[in-house]
Length: 251
Image (cartoon, rainbow, N blue to C red; front, side):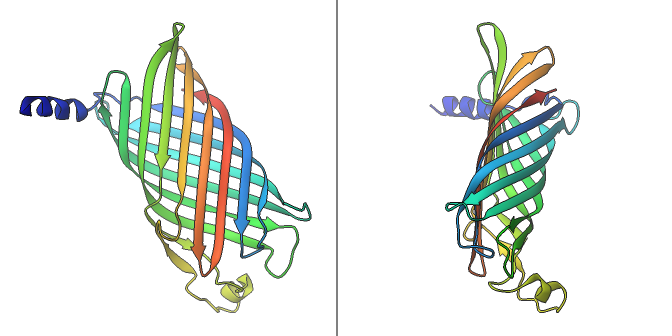
């Protein structure tokens, strides 16, 4: 029995001898749901478009460690349930991740690590008012897991990929409830506008499921991209939920 446990542990921790360099370009379209009580108590839903570019490289030619740079741009146009007003939201996200690769079973690559995220964007409401817009700005550290499984279907070389990350600690900008941006940046009337973020007040999740169809070293990539971004600072509730179909290429 102890020998079996040792063998199992050895297989679980066996690193891949090579993590290949890879570049991914994806474009997507889907649905988004937005709530930001700083500018409106109303729920908005509508269409989202996004672009994503990810580059993964090994730390060295025979390394089981890799580094990944990911750039993502999201834009959405959503309307209220009554249709009387609209939200325009945009977000630019950059992340840098470090992952350790393991071979669990044949053709299955599991990568475990963490990433640092920086995001900037905002929401604008067409209804106007004293506070028609809200800026989103923050940084965080997120545990991250990636998996890739290579297989064949009707002799076609395919690979299924899944990535997931969830912020653990970070800081975000937020005005106080009813506080205008004029007060913060012109009058200097600041009120703890840099907020500590953790799963208790900003539970969020990003994940991506794609399938690659290879033609030589190039692959056609299709799949799903999902975001769940939430926060509650100074009694201001915010969420951005989106589900998108993505298509692109992997080199």
